[in-house]
Image (cartoon, rainbow, N blue to C red; front, top):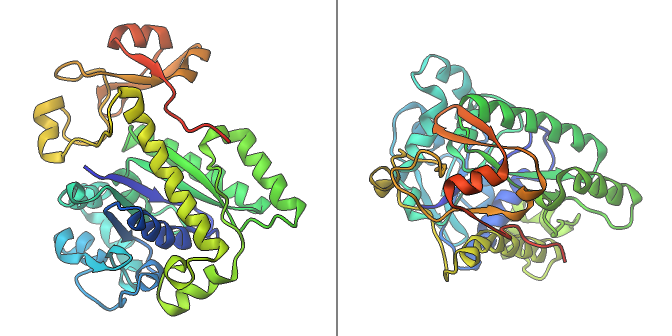
Length: 338
């Protein structure tokens, strides 16, 4: 079952779409099966992957007309795309009266989740029903942050939205990581912003920083990712490195379990195996016990919050008590800074 990552920031102009397009291409070049879902009415991820914005069915039809995700997807040499256009701009208003309106995308993507290793969702730069649908569908959130001080306000807004989503709609949603964009090593400001973000988010911030780069700006006009436009450019190389970091984080779990690789359980097998319909599965409330690994940093905390095995319910517990109850092992599950 593929991991669904919402690429989001409630502030515009931070490199969100550029990150979606180039990370999709980079992951594909590294042999991963990738789907990019364009959930932004501007449709820039669609055109950036070389797909015509006028094609139907598209993301609007998926959300409003019950179109199957498989029928909406277009294959390109850079990765698969579920396209969007300006018709999507009225979706938030049209969805208001829909039953289970926050879960429509989650339900739709479940039908194709087993076909991919990663599904990236390009979210609109605002908190609306489209963004909420993406956060509910996602396993984690990747946050692009421009190396400017106003961008820090965007992080604060998004973290409040994630917390709200955790509490009411998707308790398993986590922060995948933060990627610094438009980095200019010639300015003190870029370094100051990076240091501030690292101080607060620590290892959640990727080592790879995306530089300001002319080729990244030029590539969309050629309707292709920068990796295809100029693979030797600094921007293209940065996104290839970022893809490697993202994959490496996922492989940490395999190392902890003593396996060559690990992958998410297919949706079709999840209920019978775990008792969960889909989504993140807490070791509390499973139908049977599974090997459980917790990052070793938990031992430095007096209490942590975990899902209690029921949607919307979390418990506060001492790490050693959780380890004892679930018979878990502690391990290094997060990449080390180099």
